[in-house]
Length: 383
Ligand SMILES: *[C@@H]1O[C@H](CO)[C@@H](O)[C@H](O)[C@H]1NC(C)=O
Ligand SMILES: *[C@@H]1O[C@H](CO)[C@@H](O)[C@H](O)[C@H]1NC(C)=O
Ligand SMILES: *[C@@H]1O[C@H](CO)[C@@H](O)[C@H](O)[C@H]1NC(C)=O
Ligand SMILES: *[C@@H]1O[C@H](CO)[C@@H](O)[C@H](O)[C@H]1NC(C)=O
Ligand SMILES: *[C@@H]1O[C@H](CO)[C@@H](O)[C@H](O)[C@H]1NC(C)=O
Ligand SMILES: [Ca+2]
Picture 1 (cartoon, rainbow, N blue to C red):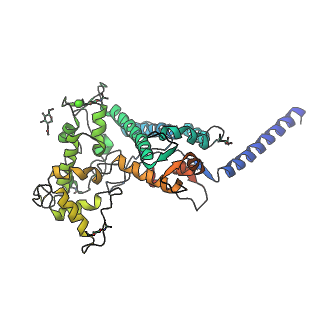
Picture 2 (tube, rainbow, N blue to C red):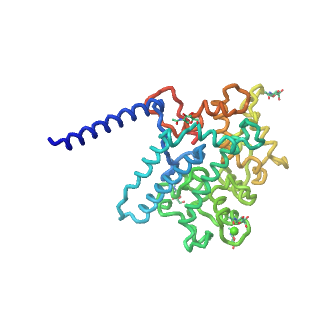
Picture 3 (cartoon, rainbow, N blue to C red):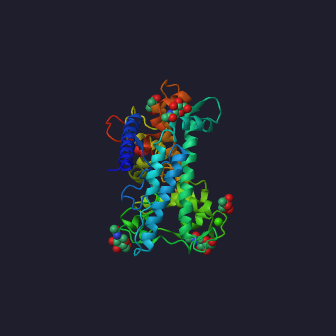
């Protein structure tokens, strides 16, 4: 063996040893946690409850950006497969392995420094050195709205056939995989319109898109939807468009009106709608009443029934429609509540920078994957 060859072998061994050492020490310092990029892309959402949780955006915009890119790739992949089944998929996942490596490299992605950097952007109303639950909610909401709009843009690229930045009803066709799916249609996104498998009950037997839905989304009535209108079209319960919210109420009535008289009586309300209404810290429950279960439902029904005719019209349903179809705001509040509960160590109802830095996994937990530890709570639902 030449001197040169043995030198090379020695170097190789040394490098291998170094790698081994650095990997194991890395692992320890992560306490077996590894930040994972995840995708909320739901190619075939599970049938069943159409209130399946909305996937919240990552707390950290940088993580969100990585995840967005990954999701785009994944989406593209499925889209190409759906439209050109003959093409062989290429493996594009290498990028994401290196993105994950980046996020798990403390030298490059230092969670403490990230929180230091983000803090002043969250502590804005007022900027007083503490993050309140309301500030957190606004932050979460902003992140998820960005996410939602991004997905809408992606959807728009598919539907806006003539690429003029608008979607017309003619351009809007459910993608082929939607039409061919088991239940007639599925919305790619998760929140609003997973159908009842009993296809007549939701009035979408001609396909899930509907002119009325489209028209209600078209604020200025020019017959085409721009990105804002199209986003509302896909996410009516997050919309501030009154026409669209009214349409959503009408759909709700159509679905819940079991005796088909066009309005909701108390029985239909109690058995179909009441349980879906998600209150957020409003304390509707009061168990001291004689009819502990029905009383709050009855009270709410009477409150909503403004003209007191014993039925709810679609207009009377408006005040609660966004609680029936939980909005991004609802999830942002949930997420904020969870963070507060986990990180507000001194229980003063607000987060100091120290509390945040000392509880980094509350903010990054959802993207951290636990290798072995059992004691770690995996809060999947807040993604
Ligand atoms: C992360 O940043 C903090 C604060 O700047 C610093 O104390 C810590 O050493 C950094 N960690 C690594 C692994 O660089
Ligand atoms: C869907 O509707 C069609 C036509 O109305 C009907 O024949 C079919 O049985 C329905 N499917 C389900 C699962 O209810
Ligand atoms: C939707 O609006 C168009 C005009 O923009 C109108 O011709 C059509 O009748 C409307 N459809 C419904 C169901 O309201
Ligand atoms: C889309 O149209 C609506 C209604 O005219 C308008 O309020 C909104 O600003 C438009 N959005 C964009 C991005 O131009
Ligand atoms: C429950 O209802 C009773 C009677 O309406 C009222 O006196 C009581 O204060 C309520 N309790 C709570 C916790 O809201
Ligand atoms: Ca329009």
